[in-house]
Amino acid sequence: MGRSPIGELRMSGSRQPGVTCSYTSPVDVRDGTTCLAPSPLPGAIGHEPILVAASGSPPSVPRMSHQEKMAEAIRRAYAAGLISREVMRQLPGIEELVIGIVVVGGVLVGLGLAAGAVASTGVGAVLEAIAAGIVLALAAVGLISSAGQVIAGIGVLISFYTATERATTYRELDVAGRDFATGLAEVGVGTLMMILSVLGARQGLKMGRGAASRWGSASEPAAERPLTPGRTREESPAPAPKPPRPVPVKPALKTKPMLDAYKGEELPGNSVWGGSRVKYLTDAERAAYKLDFKDGKIYDANGRLFDTSAASSAHSGGGNAIFVMDANGQIYASKTQVVGEFHHSSLAAGQPVAAAGELRVEQGVLKGISDKSGHYRPTSDMTDQALNVLESRGINTSGVTKTIVGAPPSN
Amino acid sequence: MSLSVRSAGLIRALIYPVQFDPRPLDGVDRVIDTVVKPGSLGATPEEYRAGIHEALASADRLSSLIPQDHSEDVIRQYLAEVARRIEAASLQ
Image (cartoon, rainbow over all chains, first blue to last red; front, side, top):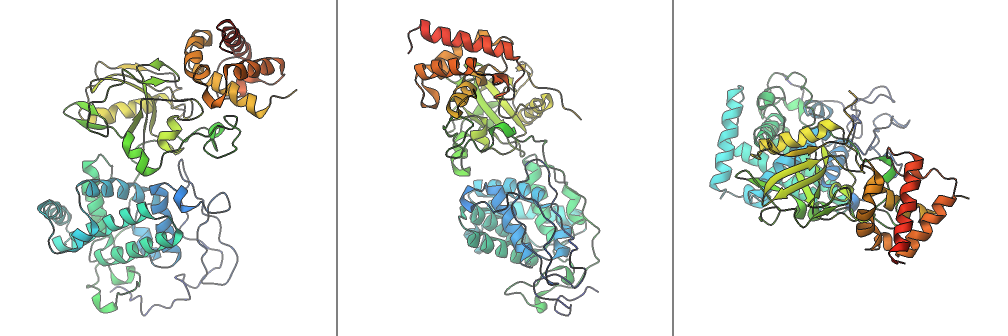
Protein backbone atom coordinates (compact mmCIF):
# COMPACT_ATOMS: atom_id res chain seq x y z
CA MET A 1 0.00 0.00 0.00
CA GLY A 2 1.50 3.29 -0.99
CA ARG A 3 1.76 6.17 1.41
CA SER A 4 -0.62 9.00 0.97
CA PRO A 5 1.07 12.32 0.38
CA ILE A 6 -1.73 13.86 2.41
CA GLY A 7 -0.88 11.77 5.41
CA GLU A 8 2.81 12.38 5.06
CA LEU A 9 4.46 14.88 7.37
CA ARG A 10 5.87 17.74 5.36
CA MET A 11 7.53 20.97 6.26
CA SER A 12 7.15 24.06 4.12
CA GLY A 13 8.21 23.35 0.58
CA SER A 14 8.58 19.69 -0.23
CA ARG A 15 11.60 18.63 1.72
CA GLN A 16 11.27 16.08 4.45
CA PRO A 17 12.85 16.75 7.81
CA GLY A 18 16.46 15.65 7.82
CA VAL A 19 20.02 16.76 7.69
CA THR A 20 20.09 20.37 6.67
CA CYS A 21 22.88 20.14 4.15
CA SER A 22 21.92 16.89 2.46
CA TYR A 23 20.99 17.15 -1.18
CA THR A 24 19.47 14.19 -2.90
CA SER A 25 19.06 15.24 -6.51
CA PRO A 26 22.30 16.62 -7.88
CA VAL A 27 22.38 17.63 -11.52
CA ASP A 28 24.76 15.59 -13.63
CA VAL A 29 27.19 18.09 -15.11
CA ARG A 30 28.66 17.19 -18.48
CA ASP A 31 29.23 18.72 -21.88
CA GLY A 32 26.53 21.15 -22.71
CA THR A 33 25.20 21.52 -19.22
CA THR A 34 24.93 25.18 -18.46
CA CYS A 35 23.81 25.03 -14.87
CA LEU A 36 25.51 23.55 -11.88
CA ALA A 37 23.86 22.28 -8.76
CA PRO A 38 25.67 23.83 -5.83
CA SER A 39 25.60 22.51 -2.34
CA PRO A 40 22.53 23.93 -0.61
CA LEU A 41 23.01 27.02 1.44
CA PRO A 42 22.75 26.57 5.17
CA GLY A 43 19.27 27.41 6.31
CA ALA A 44 16.14 26.24 7.95
CA ILE A 45 15.11 22.63 7.49
CA GLY A 46 12.57 22.44 4.74
CA HIS A 47 14.28 25.02 2.60
CA GLU A 48 15.77 23.75 -0.64
CA PRO A 49 17.30 26.45 -2.80
CA ILE A 50 16.49 26.76 -6.45
CA LEU A 51 19.39 25.65 -8.61
CA VAL A 52 21.33 28.65 -9.79
CA ALA A 53 23.36 29.30 -12.88
CA ALA A 54 27.06 28.54 -12.78
CA SER A 55 27.91 32.15 -13.55
CA GLY A 56 26.36 33.26 -10.32
CA SER A 57 23.37 35.03 -11.80
CA PRO A 58 20.71 33.26 -13.83
CA PRO A 59 20.66 33.99 -17.56
CA SER A 60 17.72 35.93 -18.90
CA VAL A 61 15.02 33.70 -20.29
CA PRO A 62 15.06 35.21 -23.81
CA ARG A 63 18.75 34.28 -24.05
CA MET A 64 18.13 30.64 -23.18
CA SER A 65 17.81 27.93 -25.79
CA HIS A 66 14.55 26.01 -25.88
CA GLN A 67 16.22 23.08 -24.13
CA GLU A 68 17.59 25.31 -21.41
CA LYS A 69 14.15 26.81 -20.83
CA MET A 70 12.63 23.35 -20.49
CA ALA A 71 15.31 22.24 -18.08
CA GLU A 72 14.94 25.41 -16.04
CA ALA A 73 11.15 25.03 -15.89
CA ILE A 74 11.48 21.45 -14.62
CA ARG A 75 14.16 22.38 -12.09
CA ARG A 76 12.05 25.23 -10.76
CA ALA A 77 8.96 23.04 -10.55
CA TYR A 78 10.98 20.52 -8.57
CA ALA A 79 12.47 23.21 -6.35
CA ALA A 80 8.97 24.53 -5.71
CA GLY A 81 7.84 21.09 -4.61
CA LEU A 82 5.49 20.57 -7.56
CA ILE A 83 7.41 17.51 -8.69
CA SER A 84 8.22 15.13 -5.89
CA ARG A 85 11.58 13.62 -5.23
CA GLU A 86 10.18 10.15 -5.90
CA VAL A 87 8.88 11.19 -9.31
CA MET A 88 12.20 12.82 -10.14
CA ARG A 89 13.93 9.55 -9.25
CA GLN A 90 11.74 7.71 -11.75
CA LEU A 91 12.56 10.13 -14.52
CA PRO A 92 15.83 10.05 -16.45
CA GLY A 93 18.18 12.97 -15.84
CA ILE A 94 16.77 16.38 -16.69
CA GLU A 95 19.10 16.68 -19.68
CA GLU A 96 17.93 13.36 -21.15
CA LEU A 97 14.31 14.10 -20.40
CA VAL A 98 14.54 17.46 -22.12
CA ILE A 99 16.19 15.94 -25.19
CA GLY A 100 13.31 13.48 -25.39
CA ILE A 101 10.72 16.22 -25.13
CA VAL A 102 12.52 18.35 -27.73
CA VAL A 103 12.49 15.49 -30.23
CA VAL A 104 8.97 14.24 -29.54
CA GLY A 105 7.49 17.69 -29.04
CA GLY A 106 8.96 18.76 -32.36
CA VAL A 107 7.43 15.72 -34.08
CA LEU A 108 4.01 16.31 -32.55
CA VAL A 109 4.00 20.01 -33.33
CA GLY A 110 5.26 19.15 -36.80
CA LEU A 111 2.22 16.94 -37.26
CA GLY A 112 0.10 20.02 -36.70
CA LEU A 113 -1.08 18.92 -33.28
CA ALA A 114 -1.81 21.76 -30.89
CA ALA A 115 -2.37 21.35 -27.18
CA GLY A 116 -5.84 22.86 -27.46
CA ALA A 117 -6.88 20.40 -30.14
CA VAL A 118 -5.50 17.50 -28.15
CA ALA A 119 -7.47 18.59 -25.12
CA SER A 120 -10.71 18.73 -27.11
CA THR A 121 -12.82 15.71 -27.89
CA GLY A 122 -12.36 16.02 -31.63
CA VAL A 123 -8.86 14.62 -31.90
CA GLY A 124 -7.79 13.56 -35.35
CA ALA A 125 -7.07 10.18 -36.80
CA VAL A 126 -3.32 10.74 -36.59
CA LEU A 127 -3.47 11.26 -32.85
CA GLU A 128 -5.81 8.32 -32.37
CA ALA A 129 -3.41 6.08 -34.25
CA ILE A 130 -0.42 7.31 -32.25
CA ALA A 131 -2.28 6.76 -28.99
CA ALA A 132 -3.40 3.28 -30.00
CA GLY A 133 0.18 2.30 -30.81
CA ILE A 134 1.42 3.54 -27.46
CA VAL A 135 -1.35 1.73 -25.58
CA LEU A 136 -0.25 -1.47 -27.32
CA ALA A 137 3.37 -0.78 -26.44
CA LEU A 138 2.42 -0.25 -22.80
CA ALA A 139 0.39 -3.46 -22.83
CA ALA A 140 3.37 -5.32 -24.23
CA VAL A 141 5.31 -4.51 -21.08
CA GLY A 142 2.38 -5.35 -18.85
CA LEU A 143 1.09 -1.86 -18.20
CA ILE A 144 -2.53 -0.95 -18.75
CA SER A 145 -3.39 2.50 -20.01
CA SER A 146 -6.17 4.00 -22.07
CA ALA A 147 -6.00 5.91 -25.32
CA GLY A 148 -7.52 8.84 -23.48
CA GLN A 149 -4.74 8.82 -20.94
CA VAL A 150 -2.09 8.60 -23.64
CA ILE A 151 -3.70 11.48 -25.50
CA ALA A 152 -3.70 13.47 -22.27
CA GLY A 153 0.00 12.72 -21.94
CA ILE A 154 0.64 13.89 -25.48
CA GLY A 155 -1.24 17.06 -24.63
CA VAL A 156 1.02 17.59 -21.62
CA LEU A 157 4.12 17.25 -23.78
CA ILE A 158 2.85 19.59 -26.48
CA SER A 159 1.76 22.19 -23.93
CA PHE A 160 5.11 22.09 -22.19
CA TYR A 161 7.02 22.16 -25.49
CA THR A 162 5.15 25.18 -26.84
CA ALA A 163 4.87 27.04 -23.53
CA THR A 164 8.61 26.85 -22.90
CA GLU A 165 9.39 27.73 -26.49
CA ARG A 166 7.38 30.93 -26.17
CA ALA A 167 8.42 31.77 -22.60
CA THR A 168 10.33 35.00 -22.19
CA THR A 169 10.10 35.34 -18.40
CA TYR A 170 10.75 33.16 -15.39
CA ARG A 171 7.10 33.58 -14.46
CA GLU A 172 6.11 31.93 -17.75
CA LEU A 173 8.63 29.15 -17.12
CA ASP A 174 7.09 28.64 -13.69
CA VAL A 175 3.62 28.34 -15.21
CA ALA A 176 4.91 25.87 -17.79
CA GLY A 177 6.68 23.87 -15.10
CA ARG A 178 3.59 23.84 -12.87
CA ASP A 179 1.40 22.62 -15.73
CA PHE A 180 3.97 19.97 -16.62
CA ALA A 181 4.07 18.79 -13.00
CA THR A 182 0.29 18.63 -12.88
CA GLY A 183 0.11 16.72 -16.15
CA LEU A 184 2.90 14.37 -15.09
CA ALA A 185 1.00 13.55 -11.92
CA GLU A 186 -2.21 12.93 -13.80
CA VAL A 187 -0.97 10.74 -16.65
CA GLY A 188 1.86 9.03 -14.76
CA VAL A 189 5.57 8.79 -15.37
CA GLY A 190 5.28 5.44 -17.17
CA THR A 191 2.81 6.67 -19.77
CA LEU A 192 4.80 9.81 -20.41
CA MET A 193 8.05 7.90 -20.77
CA MET A 194 6.44 5.40 -23.14
CA ILE A 195 5.23 8.27 -25.34
CA LEU A 196 8.77 9.62 -25.41
CA SER A 197 10.20 6.16 -26.07
CA VAL A 198 7.86 5.19 -28.89
CA LEU A 199 7.80 8.53 -30.71
CA GLY A 200 11.43 9.26 -29.92
CA ALA A 201 12.54 5.93 -31.35
CA ARG A 202 10.98 6.90 -34.68
CA GLN A 203 13.32 9.89 -34.72
CA GLY A 204 16.38 7.87 -33.80
CA LEU A 205 16.32 8.85 -30.13
CA LYS A 206 17.80 6.07 -28.03
CA MET A 207 15.18 5.59 -25.34
CA GLY A 208 14.33 1.95 -24.99
CA ARG A 209 10.79 0.95 -25.95
CA GLY A 210 10.46 -1.28 -22.94
CA ALA A 211 11.70 1.31 -20.57
CA ALA A 212 8.27 2.38 -19.43
CA SER A 213 7.96 -0.76 -17.36
CA ARG A 214 10.92 0.41 -15.35
CA TRP A 215 9.50 3.89 -14.88
CA GLY A 216 6.16 2.69 -13.58
CA SER A 217 2.91 3.43 -15.31
CA ALA A 218 -0.20 5.52 -15.22
CA SER A 219 -1.13 3.61 -12.13
CA GLU A 220 1.97 4.45 -10.17
CA PRO A 221 1.52 4.58 -6.40
CA ALA A 222 -0.33 7.56 -5.06
CA ALA A 223 2.49 8.24 -2.64
CA GLU A 224 4.78 8.87 -5.58
CA ARG A 225 2.57 11.55 -6.99
CA PRO A 226 3.02 15.10 -5.80
CA LEU A 227 0.18 17.18 -4.51
CA THR A 228 -0.57 19.67 -7.22
CA PRO A 229 -3.20 22.36 -7.52
CA GLY A 230 -6.57 20.98 -8.52
CA ARG A 231 -5.70 17.38 -7.64
CA THR A 232 -7.23 15.53 -4.73
CA ARG A 233 -6.50 12.26 -3.03
CA GLU A 234 -9.78 10.81 -4.28
CA GLU A 235 -8.54 11.05 -7.86
CA SER A 236 -5.66 8.71 -7.15
CA PRO A 237 -5.98 5.23 -8.65
CA ALA A 238 -5.24 2.11 -6.67
CA PRO A 239 -1.60 1.88 -5.68
CA ALA A 240 0.68 -0.46 -7.57
CA PRO A 241 3.99 -2.02 -6.59
CA LYS A 242 6.82 0.43 -6.41
CA PRO A 243 8.82 0.31 -9.65
CA PRO A 244 12.54 -0.35 -9.61
CA ARG A 245 14.97 2.53 -10.03
CA PRO A 246 15.10 3.75 -13.63
CA VAL A 247 17.97 2.80 -15.86
CA PRO A 248 19.83 5.98 -16.85
CA VAL A 249 19.27 7.01 -20.44
CA LYS A 250 22.39 8.13 -22.25
CA PRO A 251 22.35 11.18 -24.54
CA ALA A 252 21.51 10.26 -28.10
CA LEU A 253 24.84 11.32 -29.56
CA LYS A 254 28.27 12.26 -28.27
CA THR A 255 28.73 16.02 -28.25
CA LYS A 256 31.62 18.44 -27.87
CA PRO A 257 31.40 21.99 -26.55
CA MET A 258 32.61 25.04 -28.40
CA LEU A 259 36.22 25.98 -27.67
CA ASP A 260 36.71 28.42 -24.81
CA ALA A 261 38.61 30.82 -27.07
CA TYR A 262 35.36 31.84 -28.75
CA LYS A 263 33.14 32.16 -25.73
CA GLY A 264 31.50 35.55 -25.48
CA GLU A 265 31.96 36.30 -29.19
CA GLU A 266 28.25 37.03 -29.53
CA LEU A 267 28.29 39.72 -26.87
CA PRO A 268 28.70 43.43 -27.48
CA GLY A 269 32.19 44.69 -26.75
CA ASN A 270 33.75 41.23 -26.90
CA SER A 271 37.47 41.01 -27.55
CA VAL A 272 37.44 37.84 -29.66
CA TRP A 273 36.84 39.53 -33.00
CA GLY A 274 38.07 43.03 -32.23
CA GLY A 275 34.60 44.38 -31.49
CA SER A 276 32.63 42.47 -34.12
CA ARG A 277 29.77 40.32 -32.77
CA VAL A 278 29.03 36.83 -34.04
CA LYS A 279 25.36 36.16 -34.70
CA TYR A 280 23.85 33.36 -32.58
CA LEU A 281 20.61 32.04 -34.02
CA THR A 282 17.49 31.72 -31.89
CA ASP A 283 15.49 28.49 -32.05
CA ALA A 284 13.04 30.15 -34.41
CA GLU A 285 15.80 31.47 -36.67
CA ARG A 286 17.60 28.14 -36.70
CA ALA A 287 14.61 26.42 -38.27
CA ALA A 288 15.40 28.15 -41.55
CA TYR A 289 18.76 26.34 -41.67
CA LYS A 290 17.49 22.84 -40.94
CA LEU A 291 18.11 20.15 -43.53
CA ASP A 292 15.50 17.55 -44.36
CA PHE A 293 15.96 14.16 -45.96
CA LYS A 294 13.59 12.44 -48.33
CA ASP A 295 13.98 9.77 -50.97
CA GLY A 296 17.73 9.69 -50.52
CA LYS A 297 18.18 13.40 -51.12
CA ILE A 298 18.88 16.44 -48.98
CA TYR A 299 16.45 19.35 -48.89
CA ASP A 300 16.63 22.80 -47.36
CA ALA A 301 14.05 24.16 -44.95
CA ASN A 302 12.00 25.51 -47.85
CA GLY A 303 11.67 22.07 -49.42
CA ARG A 304 14.15 22.77 -52.22
CA LEU A 305 16.94 20.39 -53.14
CA PHE A 306 19.97 21.50 -51.15
CA ASP A 307 22.89 22.58 -53.34
CA THR A 308 26.19 24.12 -52.23
CA SER A 309 27.49 25.10 -55.67
CA ALA A 310 27.16 28.77 -54.77
CA ALA A 311 28.12 28.31 -51.13
CA SER A 312 31.40 29.28 -49.55
CA SER A 313 33.14 28.39 -46.31
CA ALA A 314 36.07 30.13 -44.66
CA HIS A 315 38.21 27.01 -44.51
CA SER A 316 37.65 25.53 -47.96
CA GLY A 317 36.13 28.28 -50.07
CA GLY A 318 33.61 27.83 -52.87
CA GLY A 319 31.27 24.86 -53.11
CA ASN A 320 31.13 24.20 -49.38
CA ALA A 321 28.44 24.94 -46.82
CA ILE A 322 29.10 24.85 -43.08
CA PHE A 323 27.02 22.49 -40.96
CA VAL A 324 26.45 21.39 -37.41
CA MET A 325 24.55 18.42 -36.02
CA ASP A 326 22.94 18.63 -32.59
CA ALA A 327 22.67 15.89 -29.98
CA ASN A 328 19.36 14.77 -31.48
CA GLY A 329 20.82 14.28 -34.95
CA GLN A 330 19.21 17.37 -36.45
CA ILE A 331 21.49 18.92 -39.06
CA TYR A 332 21.66 22.63 -39.81
CA ALA A 333 23.65 24.17 -42.66
CA SER A 334 24.54 27.62 -43.94
CA LYS A 335 25.79 28.44 -47.42
CA THR A 336 27.77 31.36 -46.09
CA GLN A 337 30.38 31.74 -43.40
CA VAL A 338 31.55 35.25 -42.62
CA VAL A 339 34.60 35.46 -40.39
CA GLY A 340 33.77 37.25 -37.16
CA GLU A 341 30.05 37.38 -38.01
CA PHE A 342 28.63 33.96 -38.85
CA HIS A 343 30.24 30.63 -37.96
CA HIS A 344 29.37 27.10 -36.91
CA SER A 345 28.75 28.62 -33.50
CA SER A 346 26.01 30.75 -35.08
CA LEU A 347 24.07 27.67 -36.15
CA ALA A 348 24.44 26.05 -32.73
CA ALA A 349 24.18 29.28 -30.72
CA GLY A 350 27.43 28.32 -29.04
CA GLN A 351 25.98 25.07 -27.69
CA PRO A 352 27.72 21.68 -27.91
CA VAL A 353 27.44 19.81 -31.20
CA ALA A 354 27.54 16.17 -32.24
CA ALA A 355 29.33 17.07 -35.47
CA ALA A 356 30.50 20.19 -37.29
CA GLY A 357 32.26 20.87 -40.54
CA GLU A 358 31.46 21.36 -44.20
CA LEU A 359 29.14 19.73 -46.70
CA ARG A 360 29.37 19.58 -50.47
CA VAL A 361 26.00 18.79 -51.99
CA GLU A 362 24.88 18.84 -55.62
CA GLN A 363 21.16 18.92 -56.27
CA GLY A 364 20.42 17.13 -53.03
CA VAL A 365 23.15 14.51 -53.49
CA LEU A 366 25.87 14.44 -50.86
CA LYS A 367 29.33 14.62 -52.43
CA GLY A 368 31.63 15.52 -49.58
CA ILE A 369 31.89 16.10 -45.87
CA SER A 370 34.64 17.52 -43.68
CA ASP A 371 35.16 18.22 -40.01
CA LYS A 372 36.67 21.66 -40.58
CA SER A 373 35.25 23.81 -37.83
CA GLY A 374 37.57 26.18 -36.04
CA HIS A 375 35.05 26.81 -33.29
CA TYR A 376 34.50 23.15 -32.39
CA ARG A 377 37.50 21.23 -33.78
CA PRO A 378 35.52 17.96 -33.68
CA THR A 379 37.23 14.67 -33.06
CA SER A 380 37.35 12.36 -36.06
CA ASP A 381 34.62 10.04 -34.78
CA MET A 382 32.09 12.87 -34.74
CA THR A 383 32.02 12.99 -38.53
CA ASP A 384 31.28 9.26 -38.50
CA GLN A 385 28.36 10.10 -36.24
CA ALA A 386 27.09 12.53 -38.86
CA LEU A 387 27.52 9.98 -41.64
CA ASN A 388 25.67 7.37 -39.60
CA VAL A 389 22.78 9.77 -39.06
CA LEU A 390 22.73 10.64 -42.75
CA GLU A 391 22.68 6.95 -43.67
CA SER A 392 19.85 6.34 -41.22
CA ARG A 393 17.88 8.97 -43.08
CA GLY A 394 18.39 7.34 -46.43
CA ILE A 395 21.42 9.26 -47.71
CA ASN A 396 23.91 7.17 -49.68
CA THR A 397 27.33 7.90 -48.21
CA SER A 398 29.31 5.27 -50.08
CA GLY A 399 30.81 7.65 -52.65
CA VAL A 400 31.17 10.63 -50.38
CA THR A 401 34.56 12.28 -50.03
CA LYS A 402 35.46 12.46 -46.37
CA THR A 403 38.04 15.04 -45.29
CA ILE A 404 39.17 14.64 -41.70
CA VAL A 405 41.49 17.13 -40.01
CA GLY A 406 40.42 16.49 -36.44
CA ALA A 407 42.24 14.43 -33.87
CA PRO A 408 41.05 10.96 -32.95
CA PRO A 409 38.92 10.74 -29.82
CA SER A 410 40.98 10.66 -26.66
CA ASN A 411 38.93 7.89 -25.05
CA MET B 1 54.57 46.30 -27.13
CA SER B 2 51.42 44.27 -26.86
CA LEU B 3 48.91 43.92 -29.66
CA SER B 4 45.78 46.06 -29.38
CA VAL B 5 42.41 44.33 -29.00
CA ARG B 6 41.34 45.56 -32.42
CA SER B 7 44.51 44.36 -34.16
CA ALA B 8 44.35 41.03 -32.35
CA GLY B 9 40.81 40.60 -33.70
CA LEU B 10 41.95 41.39 -37.24
CA ILE B 11 44.83 38.92 -37.00
CA ARG B 12 42.46 36.23 -35.72
CA ALA B 13 40.26 36.88 -38.74
CA LEU B 14 43.27 36.35 -41.03
CA ILE B 15 44.56 33.22 -39.31
CA TYR B 16 41.19 31.57 -38.71
CA PRO B 17 40.49 30.48 -42.33
CA VAL B 18 43.91 28.85 -42.85
CA GLN B 19 44.18 26.94 -39.59
CA PHE B 20 43.43 23.64 -41.38
CA ASP B 21 45.47 24.37 -44.52
CA PRO B 22 48.60 22.20 -44.64
CA ARG B 23 50.42 25.31 -45.93
CA PRO B 24 48.80 28.60 -44.88
CA LEU B 25 50.58 30.37 -47.73
CA ASP B 26 48.32 28.41 -50.09
CA GLY B 27 45.32 30.05 -48.51
CA VAL B 28 46.38 33.66 -49.05
CA ASP B 29 44.21 34.18 -52.14
CA ARG B 30 41.15 32.77 -50.33
CA VAL B 31 41.70 35.01 -47.33
CA ILE B 32 42.17 38.09 -49.49
CA ASP B 33 38.92 37.28 -51.31
CA THR B 34 36.80 36.27 -48.30
CA VAL B 35 38.17 38.38 -45.46
CA VAL B 36 40.16 41.39 -46.66
CA LYS B 37 38.24 42.49 -49.76
CA PRO B 38 34.75 42.16 -48.23
CA GLY B 39 35.95 44.09 -45.17
CA SER B 40 35.24 41.47 -42.52
CA LEU B 41 34.98 42.91 -39.00
CA GLY B 42 34.26 46.27 -40.65
CA ALA B 43 37.94 46.79 -41.46
CA THR B 44 39.42 48.24 -44.64
CA PRO B 45 42.36 46.57 -46.42
CA GLU B 46 44.56 49.34 -45.04
CA GLU B 47 43.48 48.47 -41.51
CA TYR B 48 44.35 44.84 -42.15
CA ARG B 49 47.73 45.82 -43.53
CA ALA B 50 48.42 48.11 -40.57
CA GLY B 51 47.22 45.43 -38.17
CA ILE B 52 49.62 42.91 -39.68
CA HIS B 53 52.54 45.29 -39.37
CA GLU B 54 51.65 45.97 -35.75
CA ALA B 55 51.41 42.24 -35.11
CA LEU B 56 54.70 41.40 -36.79
CA ALA B 57 56.43 44.12 -34.80
CA SER B 58 55.06 42.82 -31.51
CA ALA B 59 56.54 40.10 -29.34
CA ASP B 60 53.11 38.50 -28.92
CA ARG B 61 52.81 34.87 -29.87
CA LEU B 62 50.54 35.31 -32.90
CA SER B 63 50.13 31.58 -33.42
CA SER B 64 48.35 31.42 -30.06
CA LEU B 65 45.68 33.98 -30.89
CA ILE B 66 43.37 31.12 -31.87
CA PRO B 67 43.61 27.38 -31.16
CA GLN B 68 45.54 26.03 -34.18
CA ASP B 69 48.57 23.92 -34.96
CA HIS B 70 50.87 26.00 -37.17
CA SER B 71 54.17 27.25 -35.79
CA GLU B 72 54.89 30.88 -34.97
CA ASP B 73 57.29 31.13 -37.91
CA VAL B 74 54.74 29.76 -40.36
CA ILE B 75 52.06 32.15 -39.12
CA ARG B 76 54.35 35.17 -39.33
CA GLN B 77 55.45 34.23 -42.85
CA TYR B 78 51.83 33.86 -43.84
CA LEU B 79 50.83 37.23 -42.39
CA ALA B 80 53.76 38.93 -44.08
CA GLU B 81 52.63 37.49 -47.39
CA VAL B 82 49.06 38.71 -46.83
CA ALA B 83 50.38 42.22 -46.15
CA ARG B 84 52.55 42.06 -49.23
CA ARG B 85 49.61 40.99 -51.36
CA ILE B 86 47.43 43.77 -50.00
CA GLU B 87 50.09 46.31 -50.88
CA ALA B 88 50.78 44.76 -54.28
CA ALA B 89 47.13 44.64 -55.22
CA SER B 90 46.61 48.25 -54.16
CA LEU B 91 43.76 47.15 -52.01
CA GLN B 92 44.52 49.89 -49.52
